[in-house]
Every structure is written in C-alpha cells, then in structure tokens.
Image 1 (cartoon, rainbow, N blue to C red):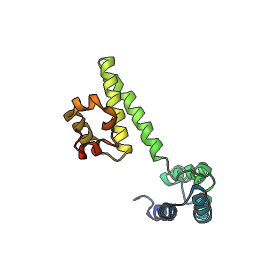
Image 2 (image 1 turned 30 degrees about the vertical axis):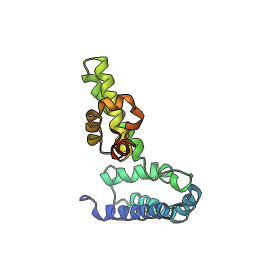
Image 3 (image 1 turned 90 degrees about the horizontal axis):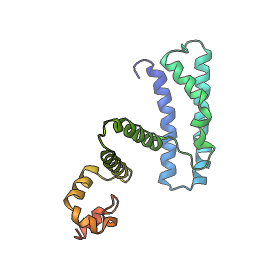
Image 4 (image 1 turned 120 degrees about the horizontal axis):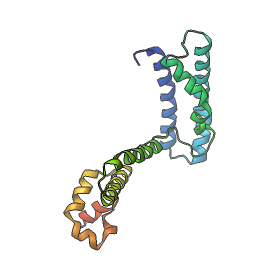
Length: 177
C-alpha cells in the first residue's frame, strides 16, 4: 500500500462496498437467485466504476504499465469478466479462497512426498493431511482432534463412524468414549 496509497485506498474502498453487499446477501439469507439480482443491482455498478477508473489510469499516461499498479490494473482489466462473474452467474462466489486452499494442500502433498521413505509412510502422511484438511473445513481444532484420536484409539477401532471430525465432540460429551 506504500507505493500507491491513494490508488490502493480507492480500490480497497470499492471492494469494501462489494463485500458489504455480499454480507447483506448472507445476513438476509438470500437464495442464489436473490443474491445474483442483488449483486447485479448493487455490486456490478461498483465493478464497472472500478473498470472505468482502471482504463482511465492507463490512458492518462501517469501510470507506468510495468509498475506494480500498472500490472495490477492490466490483470483486473484482462480478468474483469471472471472477477465480475458473481454479478452474472447464479452461485458464483466473490473469491476462490477455498479452491486455492485445496490446491495448496495438493501442492504441499506432492512436495512432501519426496521425503517419505516408504509407501506406508506416504499413506500415513496422506491420511493425516486429509484429516487436517477435513478439520479445517469443519472448523475443528485439528491438534485437539488428533490427540483425542490417540487417547481413544481402542474405542475408535470398534466404532470409527462416531469419531469423525464433525461428530467426535458429541461422542465425548455423551460419555460414549
């Protein structure tokens, strides 16, 4: 933000309005169709204003095309249709954070696979990675979950379906461990 503070602040303010709109759609529990209509009415104008601003920044010759700002503007303009898809496509999200998280998990797994000494070790690593990812997606503390699995390993062997990340706490609370 230190290189182009006014420009960055403008873009952040634009996106803040869009994220506020998305919060409204969630707070009011809008259907996918209602959400799409809401974003089309309220967020698409912001996106078009931002696009116009980006085009003007490049045309006024005050923004160097190869600067960080110039590259960011080019990226936005090149990918505008995809970035504004949430205003045209029912169910499209504002970001792809979940997909990015999954991709990083796969990449990390491939990188770590070079360090497994045996096929069995690789299998254990894959299972643990899968458990950690499942815990994250379900808002579960993966450390606590893995410790609990170790503490109750004999019980788990008899009824593994009661010890899944999303239901193991219920099993503990009911004293069924």
